[in-house]
Length: 500
Image 1 (cartoon, rainbow, N blue to C red):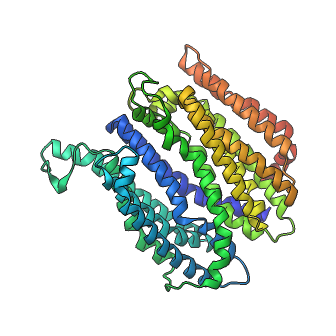
Image 2: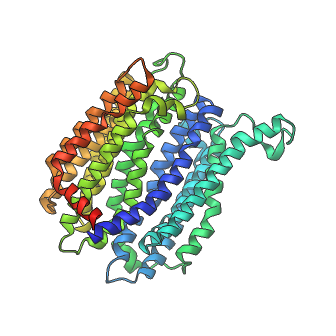
Image 3: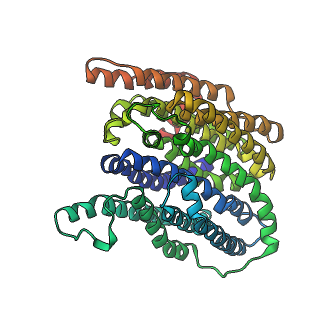
């Protein structure tokens, strides 16, 4: 239990920074939907989906590989850090330069004629992200959770500050005459441009602080260290691409696959903006998973040599499913007021009905992350390659056929179906090569019941708003009663801990 307490404690720290930071960042959706056009939101959705894909290419699995080899007994962690960071700098410069020079072609391909500067800024954002990845990983490995959290919050604070300055403050000051209309070349009609520029400035300014806190390094490429790390990380590159394919490909391709006038009064790019804004409402589930991942990845590796490792992995999985199932119900049944609270302009609530599906998809992503530990600790990362290909293919097929027919729901189902397929396949092979005593039956039943209660609560409608709120949230009571009946041992253990 001490190990689980340690994991819970670090998850709380990472979770606080991740949830607080991303929640602050999430609040920008209020600014975007209030001050920018749906077309700008559509551009934001598709360009940041592209950034999500390319971010995986720029880091190519080296973060996880760093954890694997820096925690081993054979290699000096500092040498691993120096070589890994040096390699990331070299490849970031190469990939960033290639993307920068290809910006005009990419702008035309994505239907942004004359806006190649958007993709030049994208190249710089991706390069800055890549050279920060290993220093952030080293902070986690060194258990410097508070330093990690501080750096993340500073970065997000800068990003939010620049967004507010460029999207709200400058136009207002120009309008009332405090600033001249051509102040610093300000373009009043820009939208997604200022989102990208804010991101670029925030990432660039945080680099010195993170490098300083992680420990400056000597630039050195050690082939003996990097050769096995490279072999280990390449399959993880494909696994990462599978994750972002499932999460982002629907937002990247949505506007291009949706027929014109599918939704009256909305262009395909505007509909993409509505779709992307509603995707943001599922962020709370993603925040929990991200916080869990920050703490769990180094924890899983360190516990891999423990004789009770498999039991610990099973306990973590069970607790994860219970907590996230509660969260899915709580968010879904309150979407009737959460949606209008964050999506400030009319028309965005049209896609609210897809949010419970997205929440379930993100939950399955967390389950998949738990399951994937088997091929990481057994060095069978080649299996991630095949699972990746299967997931990516399924995601593209679902989007290709369902978005033109079902619009918003077609895009959301791609997330759910792909993560479900990857989870099932990963579980099957994991139980063959590294069997872990998961409580599979209970876990599946909890997920299905929670998903059903989520939609019952979402569609429940009463004339009296207070009564509706009470009855919607009462959907959590049957789930709580089920847990009381089926998790007696867990509650008794918690009760004894409280008494002691």
